[in-house]
Length: 301
Ligand SMILES: *[C@@H]1O[C@H](CO)[C@@H](O)[C@H](O)[C@H]1NC(C)=O
Image 1 (cartoon, rainbow, N blue to C red):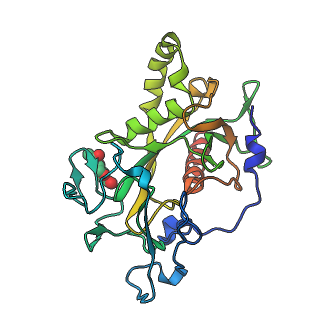
Image 2: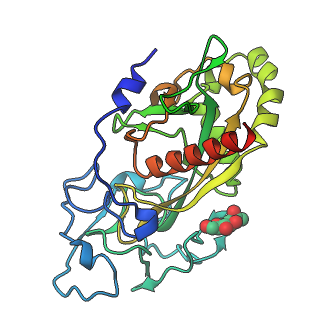
Image 3: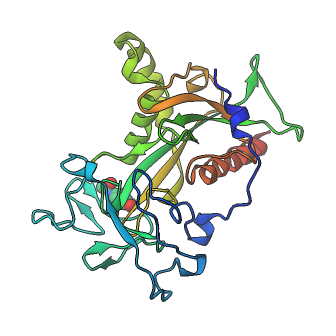
């Protein structure tokens, strides 16, 4: 359907792992998305707030389109806005997976460090913006038989969507709605983006609902924390919980026709290879899932 595998097998670039080093790369340098604001230069050794950087004078950007949006916070200086940082604030979860973040001049401070831009950019929330990402996997099969790689290992496939905005392949995740559990978000987004549940008939939906509910109750957390996302700023950033839903026999979600929906322009099963290139920190998440599933498979065979 789509040339996913080909487009994903792009030369591997040497890349540091933010999760280990706790430093970000994708939200530094260049023009901030959907704006004309250039990020202030932040060298690797000046990311950490504790490191003195006297010349640091970033521009601020607050997307005008956020004004009045029900899913977004008001402006930080709006008189009715009294956020409770580092805790569940009404229906909005303002606590971070990484720990307590600092409030500096009444603004939450990015816990990883400087990004070269202040304000909340295009993000709806000041401070953490919570997302959830489903990693739905199956083993690659041909005519019902498992396909093995040259090392006689099975090949894990996951559901990837092609993003409408950046054109990159990504996990079909999304933002956690106020008061929503992140497991619920992961499943809802998967249905909306990959199964195009919005376009399905009631009858079809009902047939699948039971099977899917059972399948999606098996999710395991594979990552929880900061996302090195290009929209992050000094005062707003993405965090996610990634769940792995694995269809061992390939008979549940593994047998479904995938359809792009919502803001995705393409969706397909993609082989996990050592060289796949994905949106933001989705690569690390997918590789973690791959290691986990191969390990389980080998221990059982
Ligand atoms: C709020 O977020 C934190 C971590 O960011 C999480 O541990 C906690 O379970 C969340 N609480 C609710 C009610 O969703």
